[in-house]
Length: 119
View 1 (tube, rainbow, N blue to C red):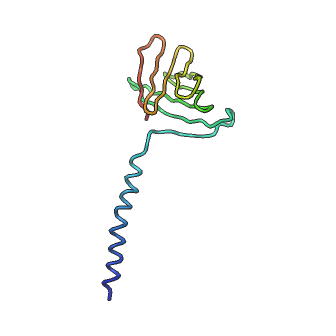
View 2: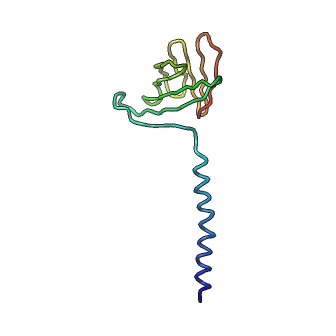
View 3: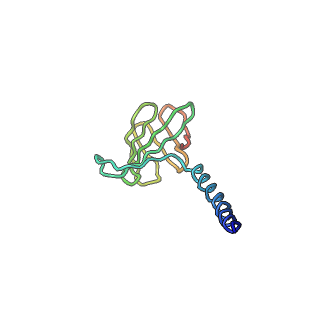
């Protein structure tokens, strides 16, 4: 009399374990860190990304205006930069930065070129 109920609950358990495992694994495979918010002053959406550079340096980039303007924080200095179109090099005073999905390439006057990976 109780055997069919056990069979039913056992099949639910067998089905539930793989689904729960996939749920847990999905949380572990997140992409790079990125924050998106709406800036009232800029009147646009801003995307913030963080990059790790050699010698324990960090680069923080806030992109706005469809990816053509960026505020870069690097070496404790803020740089307001622009690019002619998304996916092109951002040009600033004595510094140029090219962003890719996974890295940023920095060319700074008087410094060796650096490649930073996205966190």
